[in-house]
Image (tube, rainbow, N blue to C red):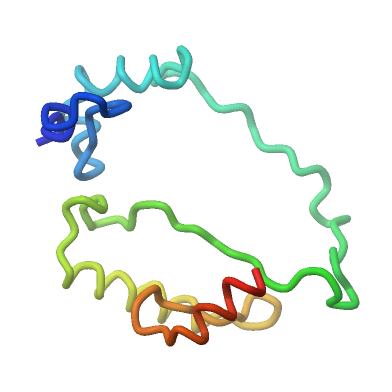
Length: 134
Protein backbone atom coordinates (compact mmCIF):
# COMPACT_ATOMS: atom_id res chain seq x y z
CA UNK A 1 0.00 0.00 0.00
CA UNK A 2 2.73 2.51 0.87
CA UNK A 3 4.24 2.40 -2.63
CA UNK A 4 0.99 1.98 -4.58
CA UNK A 5 0.72 5.66 -5.52
CA UNK A 6 4.29 5.70 -6.81
CA UNK A 7 3.68 2.57 -8.86
CA UNK A 8 0.59 4.09 -10.45
CA UNK A 9 2.02 7.61 -10.84
CA UNK A 10 5.59 7.31 -12.06
CA UNK A 11 5.97 11.09 -12.12
CA UNK A 12 5.09 11.34 -8.42
CA UNK A 13 7.48 13.52 -6.45
CA UNK A 14 8.09 10.99 -3.68
CA UNK A 15 5.96 8.00 -4.62
CA UNK A 16 5.53 6.66 -1.11
CA UNK A 17 2.91 7.58 1.46
CA UNK A 18 2.28 6.41 5.01
CA UNK A 19 -1.38 5.53 5.58
CA UNK A 20 -0.93 5.81 9.36
CA UNK A 21 1.71 6.65 11.96
CA UNK A 22 2.53 2.98 12.56
CA UNK A 23 3.73 2.64 8.95
CA UNK A 24 6.77 4.78 9.73
CA UNK A 25 7.85 2.09 12.21
CA UNK A 26 6.73 -0.99 10.30
CA UNK A 27 8.36 0.20 7.07
CA UNK A 28 11.23 2.14 8.66
CA UNK A 29 13.84 0.46 6.44
CA UNK A 30 12.01 1.89 3.42
CA UNK A 31 10.84 5.24 4.80
CA UNK A 32 13.90 6.41 6.75
CA UNK A 33 16.38 6.78 3.85
CA UNK A 34 13.74 8.43 1.66
CA UNK A 35 12.82 10.91 4.39
CA UNK A 36 16.50 11.61 5.11
CA UNK A 37 17.16 12.30 1.43
CA UNK A 38 14.04 14.45 1.08
CA UNK A 39 15.11 16.57 4.06
CA UNK A 40 18.67 17.05 2.85
CA UNK A 41 20.41 14.62 5.16
CA UNK A 42 18.42 15.30 8.33
CA UNK A 43 18.56 11.88 9.99
CA UNK A 44 16.03 10.19 12.25
CA UNK A 45 18.51 10.56 15.11
CA UNK A 46 19.07 14.30 14.50
CA UNK A 47 17.33 16.80 16.72
CA UNK A 48 15.53 19.91 15.54
CA UNK A 49 17.01 23.06 17.08
CA UNK A 50 14.99 24.38 20.02
CA UNK A 51 12.44 27.07 19.23
CA UNK A 52 13.24 30.60 20.28
CA UNK A 53 10.47 33.16 20.03
CA UNK A 54 12.21 35.43 22.51
CA UNK A 55 10.48 36.39 25.71
CA UNK A 56 6.85 35.52 24.99
CA UNK A 57 5.78 37.55 28.02
CA UNK A 58 6.87 40.70 26.19
CA UNK A 59 4.84 40.02 23.05
CA UNK A 60 2.12 42.62 22.94
CA UNK A 61 -1.16 42.82 21.12
CA UNK A 62 -0.23 43.10 17.45
CA UNK A 63 -3.36 45.06 16.57
CA UNK A 64 -4.80 46.70 19.71
CA UNK A 65 -7.24 48.87 17.73
CA UNK A 66 -8.42 45.91 15.62
CA UNK A 67 -7.64 47.80 12.43
CA UNK A 68 -5.44 45.37 10.54
CA UNK A 69 -5.87 41.77 11.65
CA UNK A 70 -9.16 40.50 10.26
CA UNK A 71 -8.68 36.79 10.79
CA UNK A 72 -6.22 34.10 11.60
CA UNK A 73 -6.15 30.58 10.38
CA UNK A 74 -4.95 27.36 11.94
CA UNK A 75 -4.27 24.59 9.50
CA UNK A 76 -4.21 21.13 10.98
CA UNK A 77 -2.51 19.22 8.25
CA UNK A 78 -2.92 15.67 8.99
CA UNK A 79 -3.39 13.61 12.06
CA UNK A 80 -5.29 12.93 15.23
CA UNK A 81 -4.08 10.11 17.45
CA UNK A 82 -6.02 6.93 16.86
CA UNK A 83 -7.02 7.70 13.27
CA UNK A 84 -5.37 6.71 9.99
CA UNK A 85 -3.88 9.41 7.79
CA UNK A 86 -6.05 11.21 5.27
CA UNK A 87 -5.95 8.75 2.32
CA UNK A 88 -7.31 5.94 4.50
CA UNK A 89 -10.00 7.82 6.44
CA UNK A 90 -13.61 6.83 5.96
CA UNK A 91 -16.37 9.42 5.72
CA UNK A 92 -17.55 8.36 9.18
CA UNK A 93 -14.06 8.95 10.59
CA UNK A 94 -13.90 12.41 8.97
CA UNK A 95 -17.21 13.32 10.60
CA UNK A 96 -16.12 11.92 13.96
CA UNK A 97 -12.86 13.88 13.82
CA UNK A 98 -14.69 17.07 12.81
CA UNK A 99 -17.03 16.69 15.78
CA UNK A 100 -14.11 16.18 18.18
CA UNK A 101 -12.24 19.22 16.85
CA UNK A 102 -15.38 21.37 16.75
CA UNK A 103 -16.43 20.49 20.30
CA UNK A 104 -12.91 21.07 21.60
CA UNK A 105 -12.64 24.46 19.90
CA UNK A 106 -16.11 25.52 21.08
CA UNK A 107 -14.86 25.17 24.66
CA UNK A 108 -12.20 27.84 24.21
CA UNK A 109 -12.77 31.11 26.03
CA UNK A 110 -11.39 34.63 26.13
CA UNK A 111 -8.94 35.63 23.43
CA UNK A 112 -8.85 32.04 22.15
CA UNK A 113 -12.59 31.95 21.45
CA UNK A 114 -13.52 32.07 17.79
CA UNK A 115 -15.76 30.57 15.15
CA UNK A 116 -15.22 27.15 13.61
CA UNK A 117 -16.17 26.93 9.94
CA UNK A 118 -16.44 23.37 8.61
CA UNK A 119 -15.47 22.91 4.98
CA UNK A 120 -18.80 21.29 4.18
CA UNK A 121 -22.20 22.68 5.04
CA UNK A 122 -21.10 26.31 4.79
CA UNK A 123 -23.25 28.63 2.68
CA UNK A 124 -21.69 30.10 -0.46
CA UNK A 125 -22.16 33.58 1.03
CA UNK A 126 -20.23 32.73 4.20
CA UNK A 127 -17.54 31.00 2.16
CA UNK A 128 -17.14 34.03 -0.13
CA UNK A 129 -17.04 36.44 2.83
CA UNK A 130 -14.26 34.41 4.44
CA UNK A 131 -12.33 34.42 1.16
CA UNK A 132 -12.84 38.16 0.68
CA UNK A 133 -11.90 39.02 4.28
CA UNK A 134 -8.85 36.83 4.54
